[in-house]
Image 1 (cartoon, rainbow, N blue to C red):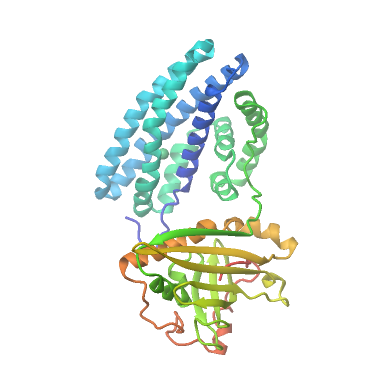
Image 2 (image 1 turned 135 degrees about the vertical axis):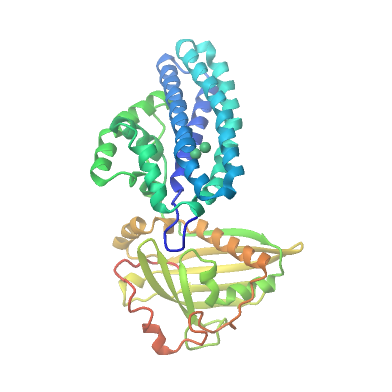
Length: 426
Ligand SMILES: [Fe+2]
Ligand SMILES: [Fe+2]
């Protein structure tokens, strides 16, 4: 098992590769359903691509079976049953892959084999898609607990990268990043060094686009979505099985935001109006990727059991902290529990030159809904575990256990990088 001192395996690439498989299986099914049927050049291009995909999937599974699972077996005897299930899935999927390969070869030479290929793809999806999901939901968390990042990186390089030619890697790289967002793009392309990356991304881009136009049609945009537009508002909702007032008290105690937020590391009330009331201010210290920043926030709505709202305070003297976002929680009784809505709205955008810098440094801020969802899920976990109520009373610093004093404000900030700071969040 991994130790606390070593970073755990980063398994995100598994979901990204699986998504590429899901994406092209769906595209293939769509082309096969379309009327009129594809003409000969598209038929050949599609058949060839499916044969390539089955070969890729075969390598993917054999890499897992021979390279990854043995390491997990060795490091985590408790994972045996799950690993056996993964291998059994692979054997079942192998049989359906062979059917798809045979049907694609048949379709390549004869359009009448379209129906056969369609059936073979459906049969493959029935066994493959649940497997991919289970591997992501159950197996990858076990892998991350068992292997260190270095072990994962070693096996990834040895089994999935070093065993392939530059041409194979170039084709794969473009296929994997087709349509992905900035985060997934970065995770994928950083699997190779800068020089190889430059070569792979530039030499193989045009051939990939041409091949896609041939099999899917010229209208399909296969570019990675690197510049997602900034979403200036959004919300996430979750039902939690406890009364609204308990949830309200938990979120209004901002000193515990760090227990639920993916980015906030600590929060403390500042001198002024009573903690948790309208006008009360607090400072949140955040960290994401390599950036650290802190912001002052002010409570703007405090209606116990119904609504708690605060915004980041715009600092017009500091261009980095000019922006402002409102964050709110609303609570609505629903059956035995409460429907909680967590939402955000950017009231003042960062200065324009900083926007593109931020979108590059912190792409997850282009759309805050996934983070809000994580926050609500953590709130639900606290409700289930009975840990909604803090040991320290509201208004006390989560770090020191006492109310923060004016001179505390400069303390934690001294060592924090403001150059790499970003704009939103408490
Ligand atoms: Fe996999
Ligand atoms: Fe697998």
